[in-house]
Amino acid sequence: MKPQNWQQKSDQIRARFIEEKKADPEKFAAPLNLSWSNWGFGMEPLNASAERLARHGIRFIELHGNRYGADLGYKTEETRRVLADHGLQVSGICGMFSADNDLASNAGPIRQRAIDYIRRNVALGHELGAKYFLIVPGAVGRPAKIDDMEVARSVETLQLVADEFSQSGVRGAVEPIRSAEVSIVHSFEEAEAYIKLVNHPGVRHINGDVYHMLVEESHIGETIVKHGTRLTNLHLADTNRGALGDGSLDVDTIIMALYLIGYNNPRCFCTPEPLGPGGDPYPAMHGKPDEAVLDRLVGATADYWREREACVRDLEE
Image (cartoon, rainbow, N blue to C red; front, side, top):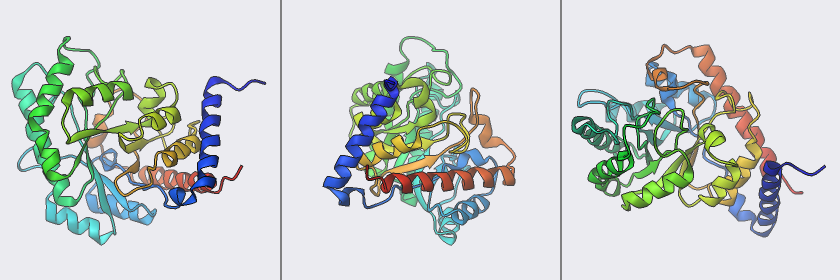
């Protein structure tokens, strides 16, 4: 029986993976960096979140970009101490862009909030050694467009603060998000176009998310290989936006594609963000944590990812 189109693409990635692994085994020696995005833990204290991640062998954390004002959010020394106590390093800062700080807004005060928000949270990233800061070009939870000038306004606004990325050494990483949640920049191709419009050395990277890619890309592995030089962080969740292993995501092909682009390096991360299905996921950041549910999410995901990565790394034929 002839393979389906997606299977043919996956088979091509598998064949290339096996071939390149034989030719240059050193390229595949280091494992991928597994991180975790903590904003989905809701109002849980950072110490509890850090303890959970450490207990499940996760050594990196993507921090909620929660400096929403001068008096709000993570305090550097306290955060550094908590993370050090649990052997964690900061992979990146997850920028949260809602209607309150929308880069594409047609209201000047809201765009100024976006600029100020980026400055505060990129500073947090610099202080804690983060490698990237996640940028959403339009508000999450606003899928209807304001007008035809959204991209132009978003680009213009981001350009005003782009120097902060270069000066801090924190990569600006644009995240494409499915059209059910945002009005602009849904695919990797659109993220590439947006980055070219921004035209700044501080904003050159992409933050991917496999849940959005399932909707907006024709094949996740193929997209990773095509845009590999841009990718610096990849959010992970299964097809039901739950723990890895709970759905039908082709995790093996994703892992192979990441190795093919040399993603197993110190500035690139694989970061689970299982938020559950639905529309706007942002309310999760204000939710009451359920420790048992979160323990299961982290444990099941980490175990499954390591199991599949080990299978892929052992692949010979």
